[in-house]
Image 1 (cartoon, rainbow, N blue to C red):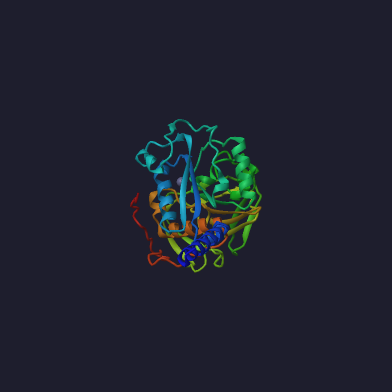
Image 2: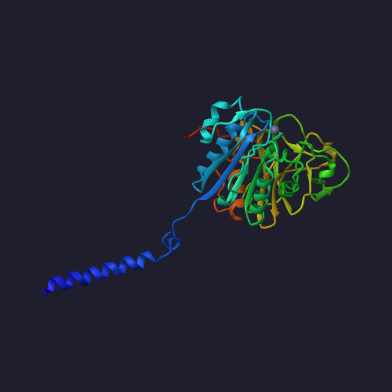
Length: 335
Ligand SMILES: [Zn+2]
């Protein structure tokens, strides 16, 4: 046997052993150092806020532009108030729906466990989910899931107790003072849970209003200016619910209350639900509100916190609003 043949055989042996070694290294070890994107799911389809087909795309793009998220959309088959912004419907890349009065889609059953965070762009009058889907979502949240409730997502599902626990407080949609306490911040800056009878859900006309941080050390609000002017929006007031395990992160003053009382409404909250985390903002009525750099910053941070319990990208954008001046970014769709 020639010397060179023996060398070749030995080389082949080395190659074979190397191949064997690589094949038993687990895939997570090979991926070490490669940052994995967070998986987000936006749910929509039924919302009396007619902008929803567009606002879903805005929320999706805000998350994608961070470079931290991949975003899917799950849409109910039956659509409510989808026609005014119907040109935006196909951008979601989901099945075509049927415009009708709000009704339960019996096949709406996203695989929540595939996602780090679920964002609701459902709203007032959204029909209840099938029972099993509700139970699946509760299990997902109890096991450490993330949820984000934007604006009128706190208007729906008044009779779903677990949902009310997740969002802490809500308004309208059949809610009464039997749904829980009215949560607000009083003149002494104390959080009040008021169980006296009263209305559930109110807002004044749309206008720019001041947002004041209540908690400056939470990952969502850390390094954010204490006061900033939010673009034209509705300031929700008199929201009620179980209000358990809720941290008020920011407040605004509603024109629906006597200014002498110096009461403040929670507009940004963080809620613990079993092992899960909920980021809840009452801001975000329409395009103009969603173009506010304050909203965009809060939404990105809040979604990351709901997904992971932390916020890594917390550098303040240069165009963040001041306490006197609104700052907006005109939305440009980037397919
Ligand atoms: Zn609204």
